[in-house]
Image (cartoon, rainbow, N blue to C red; front, side, top):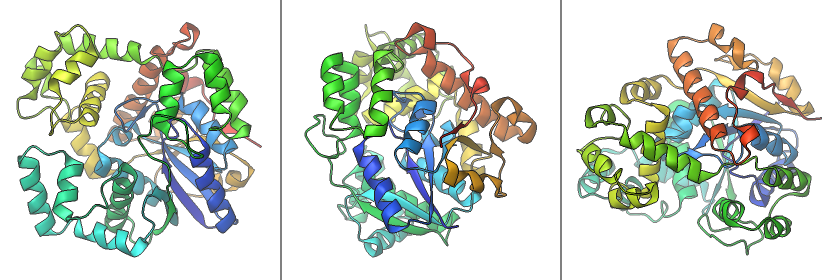
Length: 397
């Protein structure tokens, strides 16, 4: 059976995601739809708003057949690392095709641009622009002389193809037209943005949230998501920021430089900013053209999870060491019998016996990420640790 990979975060799942899955189901009815989903922390450098267990269930209810967790060491990475880890996982699982949302669906143009990304001339220009203090995405866009990188989804799409050319040359691509604005903070579109939904959930009034979600969330998921919100089963980001602020204050410069992306002396500015009365004011003091808000958020997560440069370097060189199953349906059930290049983890407690040393390090970070996310939930009863160990992959009939 043919398989289609979808690299996703579903933070949270909404109509735009359901539209992609429905489009794939219509065009490729016999192909399995396998989601490679970020776990407890996402690429924006903070905990996902809902647990990976809830998001995996909603993905199946929204049209996916299987949900596999992308290890945190990749889900927290820059666009290049995020894409590289996900594509290597797709290769290890022998997935045939990759679908992604993009503002441009001209596949020939996307592939041609992706091939240019590693050209020597492009890389030289990139280094020059980075030396001028520009962010990675801005520098790459200027180096390519193209507006193809002007949106996060187009950038990710190019990085997927770039990684595919290197790690999975036989991979086929299915770009799906994206029409909604990635950063739109209001829910006034048929296909809303994740940004708008997160803002609604974290700042809205419960009655307003429930009524607004009617137009944004697929019907099979709506009641479950509303219940989670009502019950406080979602992240209170002020708790996370206070935790991060405390950790920053207890660090020394020698300790900070061990963590990913702490270079060029920024550790000194970081410690000075940590004396601000809130993390929001601290990060404003650090932010610059080179150290964008997104990059600083990821650095914050590396600090919170204790992810060092040495560990990430080994991670980049070796790729994912396992695939953790989160949820599946009847269509996906038969695929579970397929043999893969890496262990398919179903029981978390038993996983270390199947893993090498790097795999155990990835396992530790994934466990810690879930524990820290749980500690940030609104509902005090949901702040217990080690929920990974009691979780069984959800079989949704």
